[in-house]
Length: 182
Image 1 (tube, rainbow, N blue to C red):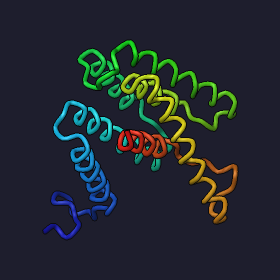
Image 2 (cartoon, helix red, strand yellow):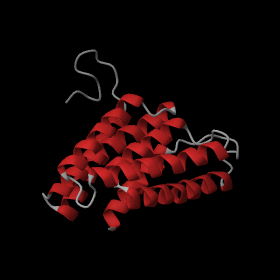
Image 3 (tube, rainbow, N blue to C red):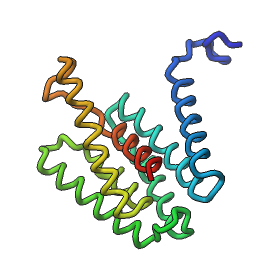
C-alpha cells in the first residue's frame, strides 16, 4: 500500500527489512512446529530474536553491541533462575558462560585479534543461556560453518585470506542448527 516508502517521510524502505522480518517469522514457525507451545519454544524464539538482530548488526557494522549482549546476559540469568531451558540451571549456565568465554578468549589471543571481543562477550552470554555442553557445540558448529563459507569465498576469488568476515552470523546459524537437530 505504501509502495515501498515510509509513511511519515516517504523515504524508500530497503527490501532488507521485510527480508529480516520474514526470516525471523519463518524461524518462529519452524521452532513452533518442532516444539509446540512448550516452555522451550519461548526460550528458542527469544534467543532467535537476539541472534537475528546481532547477526545483521555484525554484517553491517562489524560490531556486537554491548547493550544487546547485556540484555542477553540478563535473559540468561532469568532463564537459569526460572528453569526456562530445561536442564540448564543458573549454575550450569555460569559454567557455560565461563567455559565459552575462555575458549573464545584463548582463540582471540592466538588469532592476533581476528576473533573480536564482541564475539567473546556474545559466546559468554550465550553460554549462560545454553550451558556448557551446548555452548561448546555452538562454537564448534560456528567454526565449521564459518570455515566452509570462508573456503567458498577464497575459492571463488571474492576474498583474500586477510579479509575480515563477520562471525556472529555463523554463531547464530550454529545456534539454530543445534537447536533444530536435537
